Image (cartoon, rainbow over the protein chains, first blue to last red):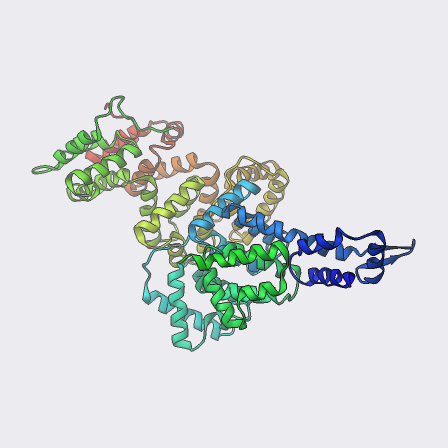
Length: 315
Length: 316
């Protein structure tokens, strides 16, 4: 029975998030060699029969185990890091390790102008290049212009904007989208508007677009995921982050879908996590805390729940 | 490097304010007094004076100068008195709103200021115009020009000395290929010139010369009909040989029939505290006549006196 219990914990670690360190300690610490032997023999997925007659850890599972043990450490490191360094590293990873442009868009568009500038500064220190030079060099094709532009923006953040210009730009976007251009992200006007206008101005454009066309701008750009993400991140970041969390918590797709949970909670804890929680509840029918209780374990789980609860105290 | 002469014993800020206020009193204006003060104070001192003037008299010094002065002299004094980032914001705003294909001011400011300096300009632009510089540049420029100017004004170049020679070689080759094929606004050309650090661009141009024999600037001179080429050329010059670039602007401004006061004012006001001494020496070498003599010959009145003071050649 003990073995089955342990099995369940281990299996949860390979599908859930984080490790229930306390339970592991209390069980493993009591095992004798014959318990361990028995465990290895009964978990044929995790241990494979080696040709030299011993049960060997399956490498993939060791990797997953490592990932789950490190999940808490990664969260702590990310949380304690200066936001500039954190964002510079996120940007770097997005360019080099995994061309996951969503993270590039997210980091460039959901930070304030000063925070983005700070990230660019930190990027200089850490990597001896500018972020725009690395993007321009490593990213090819249509996304390059959009991404380089997003990351180079130093948007005006004051209250002034022109209602007239917002109306006319909503019209421009409507026409471009209606024409059904295949490569919308190459459309210069779309790139110009999204990479240079202030967020307040863009929210007005979003509003006018809905009023005159009946549709939401991000949905109409849905064919080009990167444009949809850009509009969402700039105009309604809570919606964007809610969707990211939803995918991550469903365990869909690759490992970096899981990492998204840590990233979103840590980077938004002091920004708009409260709004994101509300939207998540609306979208999925359960609370974020509840979902995390369900699928996360140990210290990692406790840390995430603590960060989520932060939002409730601040009003 | 700077040509600004500040007296060893500077009057207090309160005294300077009082004197300036007196200079505006009554009929007419005491331009001599204005020059003797403002042309001999550095940016920090001018800022303090503006602040104290507003506190003491409840008025903006610049507005009073605007009221009392006129013409080229006024423009020079106003531009000079402004804080450098604000000054550059004003210049870029003008360059954008009245943009023409031959206008090089945006390139000049984006490429000759240090990285942090350009960020300060963008900050000042937010404050003053309630928009971002890049949104206005994107809106008012078109085609290839926008393709180059937008990343230039948005750049936040790495400022270290590190250079990657292998990269310099490969990018020199790319530049050569594109220039030979007349693809002046090619994506790679723009990428190199708008994002690489100044040290890296410098190394690239050295490799270009070593490998292909000519200065890249020479290779960019061949196509007289191409409107984009002068801007591209100016970009390289500003990044790597700014003093040469400014000497050329001065020379052309002075030699032009009737004198291009706009350019003359702009260069003197923006470089007096930076590298006008080097530019002055270059000018003398290239034109066999010292800069101040050329200015005296070409301009007159208080405008001339202010210019001469800023280049450090008056007897104050």
